[in-house]
Amino acid sequence: MDVLNSEVLAPYYQIEEEQCIKPANEFTQEVLDYYLVGEHVTGVALPWGNIEDKFRLRNGECTIVGGINSSGKSLACGQILLNAMEQGVNCLSISLEMSPKSQLARMWRQASLLLKPTIDFGLGFNAWARNKLYFFDKQGSVNLDMLLAVISYSRDMYGTQLILVDSLMTIGGIANDDYTAQKNVVCRLADACRDLDCHIILVCHARKSMSIRDKIDRFSIRGAGELTDRVDNVILLGRYYNDDPSEADAYMAISKARHWDMAECEFDLWLNLESLNLTTEHQLPRKIAMDDEELDR
Image (cartoon, rainbow, N blue to C red; front, side, top):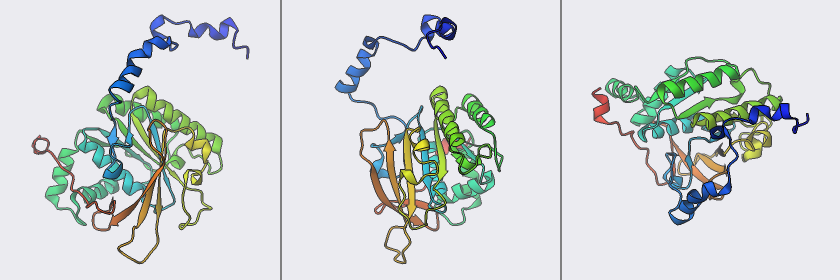
């Protein structure tokens, strides 16, 4: 295609406000503020305090959470959603692998720190989460256009800023080895983050050839660089298998943080079997703080 052809370029001759090409001096004040004031830390803080101000989930960005089966991906994502709601962020969970009932039952457990939450707690939690937490009630598979429509509708109607999509392989019946289709999905989800000013967490599985004891890195994700290169952040979870209860059960690695001034970091996690919360070594599971005013509504 001749890109200099006037017919090709014609659609780009729009009114000035719609043009995206701007002179450098228009960004002078933003850059001055960056160096003189420092960039304001925005976004959803993760529930693990050792990285609270070093890395956040910001609107306009897309994050892959990856790992082998049973590595703690869904548990960690549940904690992230709970933490986001505490910070006043509305959330949408699109889990095509787990029903809303099962997700909510686990969140009650994580929020209450109890193996079997009380009825009063559960009712109070649902009242608190009434205008904060939303579920897409469909399991199995959904095509990409439908998924994007659901995300856009939820953003417009309910103000959801943090969207969990679990998982990549449940979108549109993508084959395990169809990396072109997987790349297209990730690219369009990343575009949606920017267009809708939201953050999407996309759960991805590790390659089937990996052993449960293999150390995971960003190249362990199915599709590897085809996928991780196209998102802003990559969070990985892996399991340790040992018989000593004092030793860590899992580890988390921030293996990519495109817009953050930080090196790759990794830290150990301990699983609290009663509450299903993952915590760092000196961090106790924390009960979710629910505003009494919210409960009375």
